[in-house]
Image (tube, rainbow, N blue to C red; front, side, top):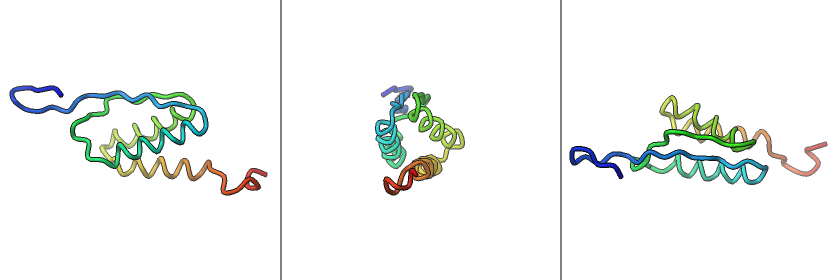
Length: 92
């Protein structure tokens, strides 16, 4: 924690999101959990990623620029629902 004039400041953090299929989906779940929590102790100052992780980072950053954590969660859910297969036959 950073303290300034006796005041507690949020710790600034940067998050790197992993790419690669199921790793990206896992990353999305972790991001959703972080966003759902009241994380006043932390301020997300940067997001980056590769492949699917970059998509997760982009969606979250887009919503955080508008200070809307719920929108970030909705965007992640919408993206992963859209690219997921309901069954093996849904790919054909």
